[in-house]
Image (cartoon, rainbow, N blue to C red; front, side):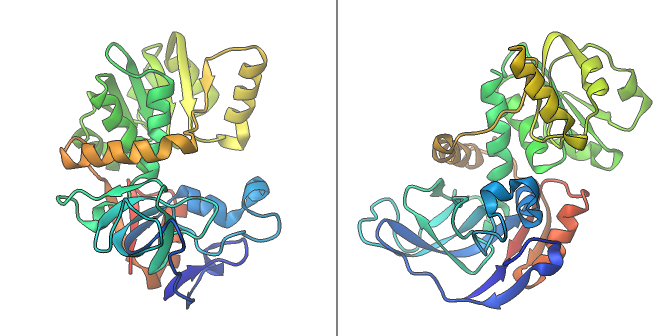
Length: 319
């Protein structure tokens, strides 16, 4: 089969598309023919390695095929599998400690965070789980709901666009902060208010929000502090410029403050969340936001585009 191989850390130039042995479903596994996957910020971070090499592999990546999001058709099942059968349309996320979906086939445990794909969702709109999964950790961890006014900064990205939709589903009042080119997208997601994050209007906002959620890790501390109500909470998905959010979070832990949060979803929550997202997709309550689609042969270009920081929503890769 064809796969995007990454055998060392570096830039997208280290990625090569090559033929590798097709995997075989072992006991308790399903073999999935991949019809769509994605390239996301997590993949790009793993490609570089950095301080996360402790988890990814000190000298080279422990796995050679990346790709968390997956959508495809079950081709075969291993002994003991009861939940899926050949021909089933599925979507979800690949476990992080084994080869991912940036290939023509992937083997997944039956109990991985995968679920039947609703018939109304095309494969090309289905490899979207990572962003909503991270956003859901913030929604649950901060009890987002009616009466909560939340600002989502970077509301056009995979995590941010999901956060806007999930917060609205929960009944919160949502302000989306985006760059000018993404204003119409943010409005279409149901935000109560959309503000240009580069404008003077945004810089003049003061003490309005119960929660400020930086979904891209780019807000200076002085910026989110002026936006929070007294007793409000800042949450982020990222260490921030020069690691400032991580340092501030560690300081908050020392003084036992909940003003700064870095909500991280648990592995145990992944499978139930994918099942919940399946229902939201089937009922039309959640909208996939797809930026561009690349062929697997052109996946190096997909990585370069994601690393540029210009994407909105998800960058999809198809065979």
